[in-house]
Image 1 (cartoon, helix red, strand yellow):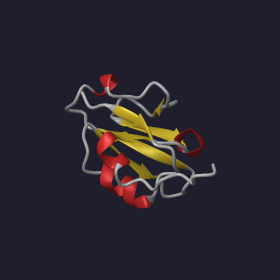
Image 2 (cartoon, rainbow, N blue to C red):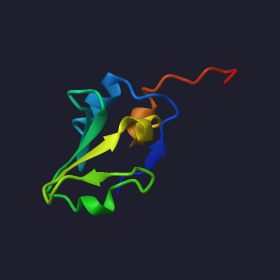
Image 3 (cartoon, rainbow, N blue to C red):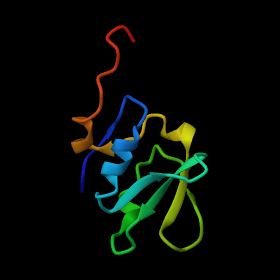
Length: 92
């Protein structure tokens, strides 16, 4: 199972796009910008891959979920994406 890290910055569209190629799920911004959607791959046992820190509201039995923007301020991403994240300000 992949290791998860807490990203210390607001996720950018490029980071979210990069996640689209990851499995077992990808993250995308909802069309109304009110939340992020987590799309699970039903072929995977996705219950073992959900970060406990995210409050996920499931919409039915299919592999879809929504996560509120405020809970994704520091989005959990795969370690491979951390290298693309900008450094936080030194005086923060």
